[in-house]
Image (cartoon, rainbow, N blue to C red; front, side, top):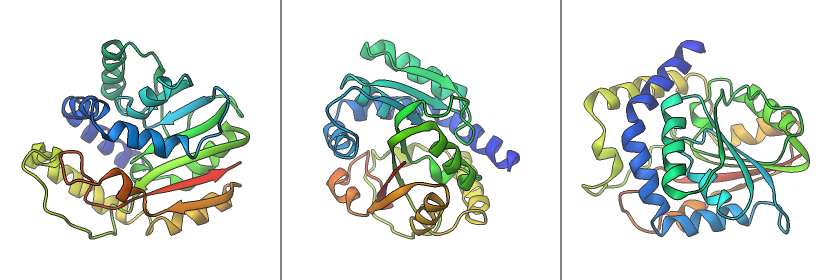
Length: 238
């Protein structure tokens, strides 16, 4: 398990500069209000929340939610991603807290957060059952997990991508690295989101729900941000 985690960290280290630019551009695009709507309709309302953004990358969700007045902490295992988040923080004049930390074993006190949010993270966790158990412990009573992801290893959806799409910037070595990671993770994970629902139930979450139409609302156009694999959103409450 540790070997594949190192491989995943190396992959994202190599992609950091391109990823940082892409997420900053997305923050300045019409995708930002769409993502904000999807987040706000699932989070507790009427008060300032303490939110953990797990697998924050360069801070996309952290910045959206900090701009709404919430206290946000973003964590990522890749130091270069956290450095990118801090650079973006200065550019945006928004200051969530960013820490290098393992998503599968966050070192916060139990019951520290009102909400946990993630985007395209759980697909890269080789110890997902244990991660969900850890996250359950980090939430306060009545807290919620909001997880956006897709079945990247088993869904064969394909769509023609524009020439300016982010995936067109990947090098041959990066594509090969991702293919190797996919092969390894396909042997570990199971088809999703059905697997997630079972894991979350076993981790102690309640009222676990899946929204399979979120991708239609976010990705209305096939542009440089488009995700060719349909994303879903899982919400689960403590």
